Image 1: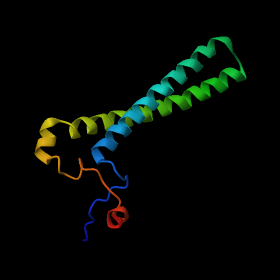
Image 2: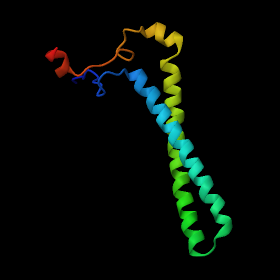
Image 3: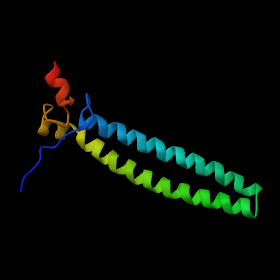
Image 4: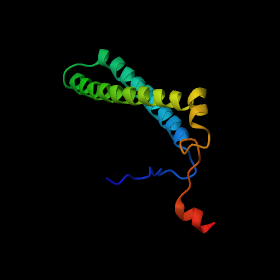
Length: 111
């Protein structure tokens, strides 16, 4: 069975820094959807009938997104903490590909 060398697709960035950025993105998205849900819930007191049902459907959709972004944020938070723990950094070494900036092979050959 042939094994492949892991290839990182983001140029000029390390895997560790991308994990940090993704964690921030999902954490911010989670918060955004929570605020949006809160706004819709506050509107529920003033409506009824079809409008109420539409708002409830939107709230249910937002709750699903909140759950998904919460799980992604939590998972990336763990990965971010592990990758940046001093003991892990010392064990792997800062020259490990996880911490090194990556460059596109084509741009390497051009320079």
